[in-house]
Length: 406
Image 1 (tube, helix red, strand yellow):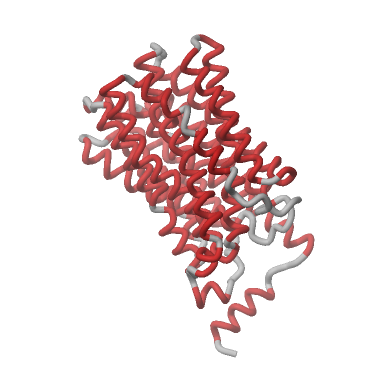
Image 2 (cartoon, rainbow, N blue to C red; image 1 turned 45 degrees about the vertical axis):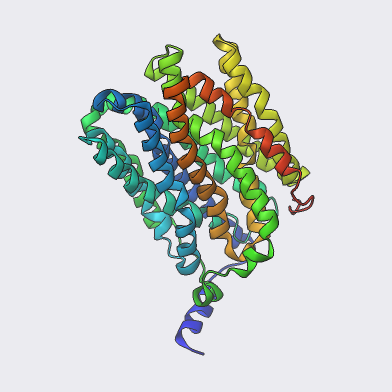
């Protein structure tokens, strides 16, 4: 037996079974949920900071849209590359170092002196965000044979809660530290990386992955349902990422809210999405992912349209309900993809999360910014509320049995 195989076998022998295995899986889930929370807190910062950055540097709505698109490109569109690397090498550094790096990159936005510097900060912080997600989302369900949708829902919802906190945190952080000294807001991410360094155990060595790395065959075997699933995620992401980036500007400019009030409402909208994600994961273990996706797509549209058609608290309540329904599908899509191509879970997780979100954001955030300059933000954002109808008809084409029941 060669040294590599022996090392792999030795590592495999250290993997416990039964109760100890379950305990270690639970510890890893908790730690990765904490990391996901802080990573996505920084991922949700740009929308909250944009009104201040627009005022500081005199940006147009088109420039603000391109800045949001750059973040989506770096943090999401590049995730499959990080998924490939994590499937190939398996080092825990993808999960450990990224909370600190994302915090430092994003929080330096406050001291950026010009538009080019803003782009550089966004790309650095976004790259760290991208590196975390594929490995972490792959690991949280590894070895879990029942209620995978619920486990993934817990992980996804922790990130969505962090994303929801981001606008509120970054509404107050410039007041606490000053916009020029916003880098102090990176401290939680740095501390999170320290915790993960000491307490997140290395993954069990997978000899097959070490030798073979990425494999195309599992993806080719399931290309049709994976393609349909991908476009369902893409359609939902058009609404999700564009609203997350541009709602604060819309509420501030066209509904007269203060920056703090606008970001607080965005936090509420995203927090409801976290609740929706957990609910959707729980439902998928009982009625199947296909039904959950269809319910989410058809159910979100009327609430989002009511948000733009009403005013006052009824409008706000409709926005919160729309956010809850829209994000039912996040954990469902990831688990369905992992089960369709189980040997490439990091790669398909990145395709269903980062790549779909990234492509949607890269195209539609700048496009919506440009359309807003031409026709107004109200009309442009309202039109996006109809997009989930396309996702509903796509979801009907998914195989009826792609999920393992709890």
